[in-house]
Amino acid sequence: MTEQPWHADVRAVRRASDKAAAHYTQTAAITGEIFRRLETRLDYLAIEPKVVLDLGCGTGSALPVLQKRYKKALLTGLDISLPMLRQAAPTRLFSRKQALVQADAQQLPFADESVGLIVSNLAFFLCPQTGRLFSEISRVLASGGALLFTTLGPDTLRTFLDVIEQADPVGARLRFADMHDLGDMMAAAGLAQPVLDIEYLTVTYSSVESMLGDLRAGGAVNVARGRRRGLMSGQKAAQIRRAIEQSGVRDFTFEIVQGHAWKSDRSGAPAGRSSVLPERYIPIRVDKPD
Image 1: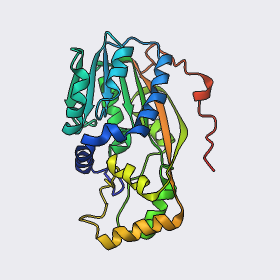
Image 2: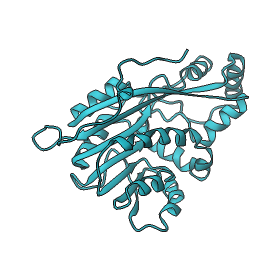
Image 3: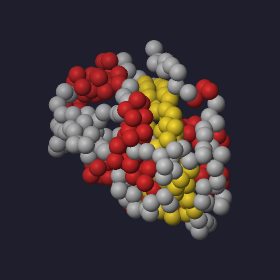
Image 4: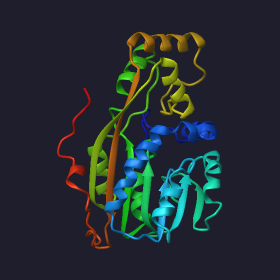
């Protein structure tokens, strides 16, 4: 698939992650909350993987949780940012069953069928070739292995970004894949029984400054390939801030896409596994926030 102006620029993603690494753990409350919700779903996957991969592990905050759950497994955290992995290093001081790897998720440096479980929290939207990402995941997952992930959907920050777009319509902005498109790509990659659903998380702030401060601390910058290049003038930055203040927007709404699937066996059939997620996780209807 040809990369488009609204796809993520991998080099820009790496630079933004590198810059945010030092303070990311202290400011990643939203990421942590979404992972806590993701982690409850592991209760419904009746597997005992020998190898667990945290794909896009960031500063490694999920690694101790996963190691506690899968005590006998070799746990690997992978991220594109070396400074992020350096922040993650202290989590593995007392465990020889953890490894950290710097790599692009779209080119996984692992053998075929070598991983029993892949977990990823809010990383997939930063991969420009999502279909290729799922193909790599399918390649490295062992027969009977599982994928469990969260990513951002197209309604994420929509009101906030609309305000910015009106004030500064120059350049492309990152687009988030629709749940149904993700499901199609998972199936095309050979992942079996894909299930996806959506929930919304809204964070309200007392001021514009606190809103923008959270974005800056979390490394949330425009990483689209077709973004405006070069430094933004002080006048333009002031114009955008003024537009936000006048809009009255004081919250961020995140559309959280949650998904899981299994690795098919060599015949293409599901590898003897079935999901036991409760019915409330089946996406019969999606209610958008008012």
